[in-house]
Image (cartoon, rainbow, N blue to C red):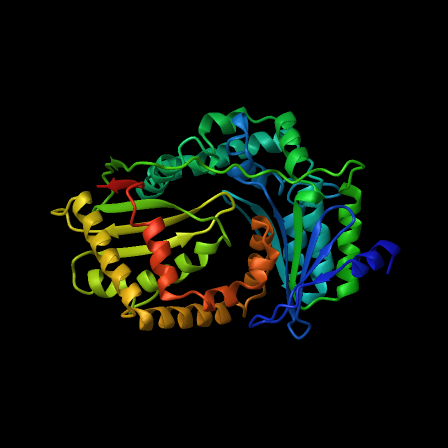
Length: 433
């Protein structure tokens, strides 16, 4: 092992956290990169993820859609890798590879047999940190991404979600479509992509996550070999997060689409960001409302035939979270009537939480959440994804103590979060007919 890898082990920070699948370790690399290891040597498979704080939250002006576009282009050649070679290499050792872009992040991953973990680190590191950005390949990807945008515009439910985000986060990057626009995508050139890459795709803004079975020293050596070449004398800072302005009044709108069979309503409320205090209560509330056949919305609305579907769900984010209510219903009902039905049931639930009548619902919701997590942790790719998101949200201690925080959520806490977040006059709503 070389000197730098030995230094890595010396500065390792172990967060003594025990989940259903064991502890994880965070290592601060001298380059500024964050290395996260969830080592389970009995597993014959390893998942390697590279996560960056990128996505639409961090795009500026003409960069709209650039995170997603760059996701495409990074597969089209890198240092020592010709266009198309990445897929051939990964397929050659039986690995599975993919990438995704969100509002808060971009990540790239390979899952393969444990002995290929160091090679996966090398391939992903070269792709992400040293892309070729070949002009001809950039031009080839533009029509591909434009077609994605057109398909999204033709999908009524995608349009409903985008319209809801635009209302709920007006003036904030969360209001924009991850894909960008046809005009923005067609305007991208190599110089713009290089500048965007230089600003966000560097070690100080990167987490390398390896979960499953792997040879520790070999993985650390592969990480060291990749990131030390990308380090610069002046340490780059991680991008700051812009908080959205306060929403102060309701916004209702509607969309018509010939492909819609039954009308639906999507309602969004501003909620706490990931790992903020009320986020735990809202996660349990989501399970109470929509987590299975015995969930409140299912038994009260769907099983009784009052609505075709009804969902309440908390979505975390780095800048802010969102609590969603959605429903599909008969033509005879209006959006305002459906909204009133959902709110009336939530008002009843609020009273039940305060009086103790909902204690059984709270306990059952927590049990279901725990069980689902145990099943999720059977997949090394799920382990790596969780750790990557914790990096994006920047809350290691909170991630480490997540289930302890969930266990500590009381019915009264859920009631307070419900009242403050959802049972309030400021929201955005979009009906689709």
